[in-house]
Image (cartoon, rainbow over all chains, first blue to last red; front, top):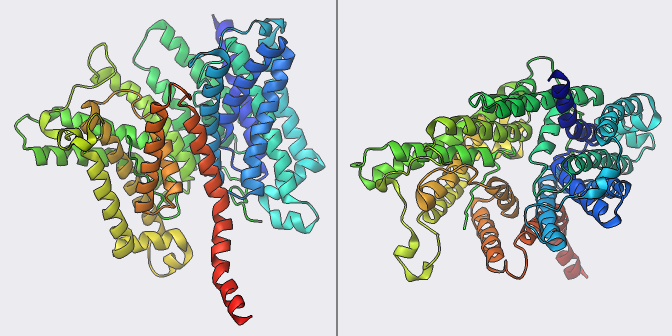
Amino acid sequence: MIGSFVGAVLRISVPYSLAAVGGVWSERSGVIQIALEGILLGAAFCATLGAHATGSALGGVACGVGCGALLALLYALCVVVGRGDQIVCGIAINLLVDGATRFFLKLKFGSSSNSPRVVSWEQLPHPAFFFIAVAVFLPIVSAFILSWTRFGLRVRAVGERPDAAASLGVRPTRVRLVAVVLSGAVAGLGGVWLAVDQHQFVAGMSNGRGYIALAAMILGKWRPLSAALAALTFGAAEAIEVTLQASGGGAPVWLVQMFPYVLTLIVLAGFGGRSIAPAALGKSEQ
Amino acid sequence: MAVAVALKGAGLFNVGGEGQITFGAFCAAWVGAHLPAAVPHALALAAALGAAFFGGAFVGAIAGVLRALRGSHEVITTIMLNFIVRAAMLGIGLRLFLRESIHTAPIVDAARLHRLADMSAVFKGSAVNESLLVALLVACGLAVFLRYTVAGFRLRAVGQAPLAAESSGISVKWQMVFALVLSGGLAGLGGSNFVLGYKYYYEDGFSGGVGFLGIAAAVLGRNHPLGVVAAAFLLGLLSQGALAINAEVPKELVDVLIAVLLIATTVATPEVRRLLSSLPSRVRQNRAA
């Protein structure tokens, strides 16, 4: 009972953790990442499509991650190079992916709600184990790169003081492009897991997870490890919700469902430790 | 056809339209269903519309107060509030929805808005109703309010130059709360369209992303109330057109089209403005030559 519950918590937390860490990469470089929702959804769709077309699970994973990175690149081109409004462009990307995935779903699989079951995912020996390991491993690696390497320092520098970074010969535009694309690839892996876990693509299957990941990132104060822990908390809340729903208790389900968001609001309100966003977050002028 | 009125006032970004619409619509439905049947039409309508406004304004106010007192970023708080409202409606729905259904009891006749199809043959077969008139009226009122009143001026001042506004004695914090309350209230009014003019009850999940299209309308309309109406009309046209051609082209493509429009607008605006502002000097140069 407890073992299966822990398993459920871990499985549910995978996309949150990966997307939150993806968000950290983008936001530490100064680019707001509301497009996470669209990246998760797009990656899940491309992974399904890739696995279906190539007949190989690895092909599917590659397509999903590639799609996440490509969407992030598109987003970065809009806001970093084109200097469009980050929130508007982010929401536009989410809208774009929601429409495009439904469109291609109908075109490719002739259904407006879901793809057929993709058998090639069964090639992966222990998919849950593999993805959980990645979801634990990537935050650690990200924390290390951000804190201890030259590239990590540059990402943080352009996120805090792009002018100072530029005066030292770092190009904020280029660093941000790389950071955002990296963010998309990491979050894309989370989207791939959604598709693998359900063995198919379902229209709108990201279902707000990108926004929850954004919340986890804020709760984790823009640090990869804390963000992953916050994602785990949200995963636990959702697992409790699912258990309650299954047991038919009824009433408190909506309270549990509300929990992650209320918790985020409380943290945003500055109770329980101040969380300070990167100084140049959301400012596209350099 | 949905006409969403969204507002980005005082330099704040309200992404909470979805939650505000939902809660506003629910409040309108609740009040509408609980009015005694003998209440005159005008009064019942005012009560239901007022309830919709206050419902949306309440949700907006939470974000506004958090922003003003604790400095919480309104984009994130409004997104969180969207989900909180969604979860709360699940809880409220358990108690208040009709048994075995996902909607509330229907509202009384007096609080209903008439369909325009009943009045003029032009709108025959369309679900458009008097809430279109309400929306147009509100937009015009808002344009006047922002342009010609002291309160509107304060709001714009805070949006364009918060420091200057603060030093001339305007409380930036309370203007922010006010902006989000107003914005939420208007979104709530937008939600009343569904309840008072279309289905006559609140139904779970009715908004279906209208709140986000409201943001699109605000961006395309360049944040001017009348521009927003034009943009909302365009989006409504696109959505309705999508249904019309659905047999040949899947309607989802319209979402993609709107997204492309949005990105193009926000990316191109500074560029266009630069071109426009350089026009007079070029003309002058030409004349000198």
